[in-house]
Length: 232
Image (cartoon, rainbow, N blue to C red; front, side, top):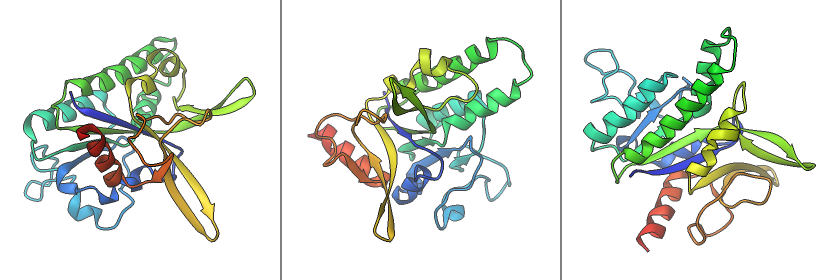
């Protein structure tokens, strides 16, 4: 069973940038957002096309742009079975896979499209459990704010419907959820991850896994902290 991490937060708060320090030779990014990574030198490290054929090749490339759920699941399965060089798979972000499906079915009348979206989210997240043990899947997702008894809390962002939030409950499928936080310190802006729930966020992690409730948004450091915790 592969390890899995959910990283949540609003757009522009450091989710994707946190990947800057992980080894691209060991990383495969699936990008429903269909955007470029926001760190220097990404084009030489993350290949969308094979240099010889000019087309995407799952054996040589490590960056796939798609909102197609079947392709997302197939890519994870292929990496698990055929790409032993890859240690980390990133879905950045699962929210845009949902948006893609929702917009494709925007003119479809009825509740069926929301059921299908919920089914795809569930099947995709559950499929991670069947991947090889030495693989870590990092799922990025957008958050939105909702009020509960007068208290605003961040929740899993779902475009167009509540079925994913109310029935699938993706946060319950992860033991580690990091939520982005951006703080102004003097003239500087600090980007971090919250590691524990403070009653207004989604974050959670096992006691003792991280040194503090807020850690830098460095996925390499996060993965090392998880490794040290699991190995004792």
